[in-house]
Length: 392
Image (spheres, rainbow, N blue to C red):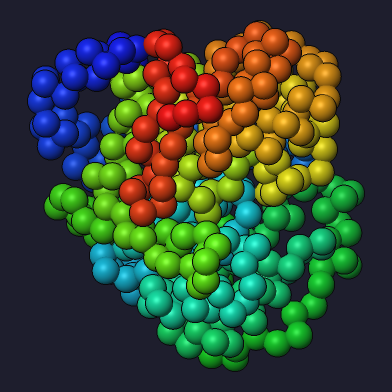
């Protein structure tokens, strides 16, 4: 943390110091990630648990390990013909591979997250519009239709030449993992001309200590995020390194420290989780935790949420008003004294819900407002100052 941000005068003082171009902590995403890994090599960076129990198995990467995986991912994508103006799309729920793909795709080329809840026709339209060459998605998995949607979409997206599959079986232990091959749904059809790779083995074949290509010389378009499509077919917004890094810098300078733990059950195909949360971790060295592929929608997440806060020692929880309402229907049945604040966005928060949450947990909700078209963060109530609840 750097500046105090409680009043309008604080904001104006920050603006007077220097323009953003002089303040930007790194010129590229890779430099920002490498700098953080150098400062905090053995601190936890990213954790994911497949199931929602407070004692369930989880996989954690340190910043040193995450930098290595992201480097391998970027090298893999570049080896598949992805240049700075080419697109790596992903159709994935939350997992460690999702964050690695987001970062590695943006370093090698342009990353294009796609909501797996969309219909195949919408997914295909986004793949065609962005000109994606590579798609990272799930391998067919029990109780998931993501692989089936991807196969159907690829029938209508001939520009995609390589499919990289993430197998969630990697997060399971015997004997449960032994059942996956028996229960794995069969794909009815898939384009015969596709090159198909397995994510972890493909990464393992790539160098982890350095990029095999020159990093970008400076700012450029690095991500395509689609809008919600509430009024028709989703539209695609372009995001530059500077905007991504700005989201991370804001959080790191005003709110988040390396010792913090960000519990984030929101999807990485959406800008909220990708920028104010993941980029906050990348900028500060904080620890980002993702419970279940479906996040809040995952089985047991709401029922076990307060126990998950206790398990991970979460200092910040990331949420939306509908999730807060669900959580307030359950008792706070764990030690949540580690929590400093809840960060809430996506819709206005009713004042009554703000008050109920504060009474139940002892912490305040910090509301923010953002848009996909604006690389997310636009405004937020001050963490230390007077909050106008229900307004940002």
